[in-house]
Length: 289
Image 1 (tube, rainbow, N blue to C red):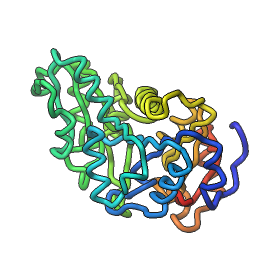
Image 2 (cartoon, helix red, strand yellow):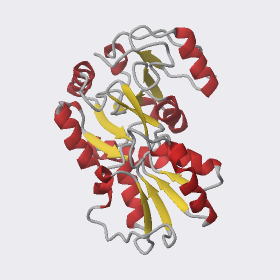
Image 3 (tube, rainbow, N blue to C red):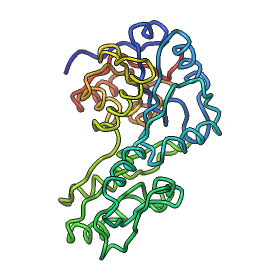
Image 4 (cartoon, rainbow, N blue to C red):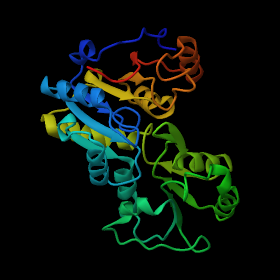
């Protein structure tokens, strides 16, 4: 453990001047899939107005331009960020490099844009060369356990899986729904080989930092980069692996683990971080300036 649990930070403003680049999570920090969070958006706008660069970094299994359109519909203003990088972008890059191989697809119809513009060949499980998992076919009713038999068949064929969204769960309003990461974790527990395209793994961070460097005209030192997120597994672990500070938002996917969105229990928060062996630089209920 790097340090003891930091006190709650009420405002982002006192921290902002210490960083040139923010890598900001999307789901759970600036919206909950249903509505945007105006205070969080304002905080990012004001940070940018002071010269900071904001790259949204998300495990959405869709190309970044699809995510941009989605969050715009929720009311996230375009001037709250400079760029967007998604795990869908990383997945598309892998697919592009392996177009000679056929794909067995797991995921809902809404994730099909991840394949658009690519000369992809889909195949049934018995014939496919590898698997791309973007999510559950029906995340309103299914869990990863519904896929155990299918994953057993995949494992018997030793099929490699690309997980286009390493999140296990995500907020949809006040509800948590399962994501591709839940299926990928189960497959890995069965001995399957998995490439996780998004946070906390390095490829998505490399893309985000490259975009920030291009926008600023030079790389930002890692001690001037801040990750903001609400997930221990993805945001906090990813920041630690990258070697950057993390501002952790408690009113996200861990809210119930922490005892509620409005009045979280510091003891529960500390136990969660201790169990993970990780500690953020700062913690906030919600992102606000």
